[in-house]
Image (cartoon, rainbow, N blue to C red; front, side):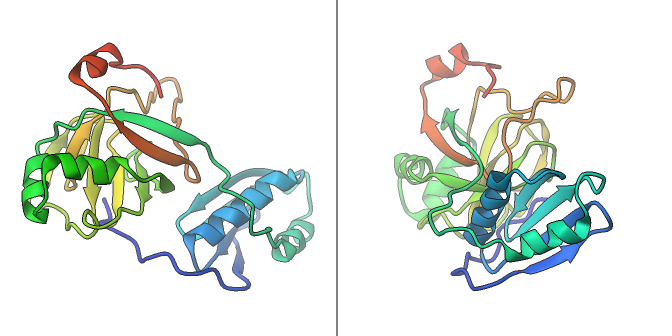
Length: 230
């Protein structure tokens, strides 16, 4: 189910909580999203044998382990001792997603906020967003944070039973893209022509830790890039 928002990011604090998840993973919990992202990037940069995946999600980071390649006690000590430098950046890439801003909720959103549809587009396309998590359907990026005046919109009172693939939407403090058709209660501002998920091919280009920015496009560019991969 789609969340509308998450609690605001808080300034990093010293330390974090590291929890063993069975014998093949650790979960690190932090005070803020950016602290979690920096720590995840630092783990990836170390390239420790036995670490097979690092997955940030909001204020948590899951570290998946092959216990046959490194003793869990040794890795636990390494993880607990890891303090990333302040300049360590997000582990992901910056991705630009073209958007035709013609969504059914664009004008109602503008009316509700007391601004023009063009201003809604400008406010939405301006920032670079951090991807905090992937869900509620495969490949759906939860990205934020929205800035005033877009932040704080509640979910639609009546969710749609079917949102078209590629729909770009907002709710609460977050924005996202529906990679495939599904029910949804977020406000639809536009749509991207790009293919963001191919289940048969195992294609999931957006990951937690990436950054995304939306770029307004014309109907002509939308048609020209239809089904192109990100």
